[in-house]
Image (cartoon, rainbow over all chains, first blue to last red; front, side):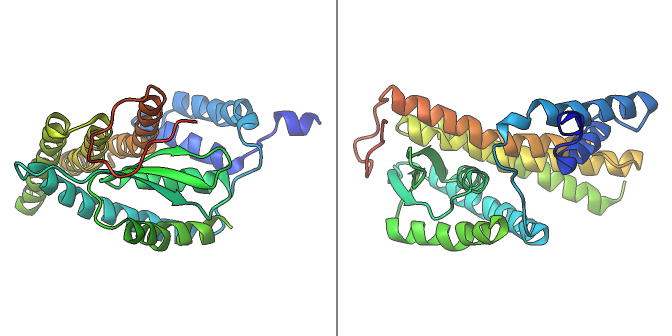
Length: 164
Length: 110
């Protein structure tokens, strides 16, 4: 049990923490390496209980495509929303939309919710207790069915493949 | 500095400022709490994103060293902005903040 209790429960997280600490420190020095190693060891141990089942990205390459697509969408959608805001006298048609979730893994759902919030014009507001519905607030809604279909096609299906 | 780089930096800074301004105007102009939530998420994503990117390019061009700090600012903002928006929306629903009359659909409160 000692190995399980004091080892590295999440090696990738430890590596990421170590690298982030080096980047934060403006140059790799002896002190930053020691502190980075300590953090990389202790933080995963301290937060281990927050991960009930180990989350895993099955397709890292596909995930990076996903990130690129989301960044592109953010830029396009930002320009659209900026236009909506700038046109004087036009009140946008706001709406609450219930989005039926197909994803089951908590990490996948929270990635989808974050994507929806980051994409301008939509904010994910709440999730139902049984994790089947996501409440989305839309700034300017044209067609509810079309919006749900777009989110499903562009974000939910790729995430399903990435996390399945 | 290379004039092309200078132009890229200038464009990024101006567009970042413009998006942040649009976010601020939205915050003042939109009709209810939920719509105003959209403004900060937009301003942080594209506005701050392009400003930090321009800072990154500037320092990489002038010092020649890899500038990673701004990249980390971007990553942390992108990770935390949706969570704060979500918490604000949840709190508003819990307090039954009034939504604009022409809003389609209803907020839940469970």
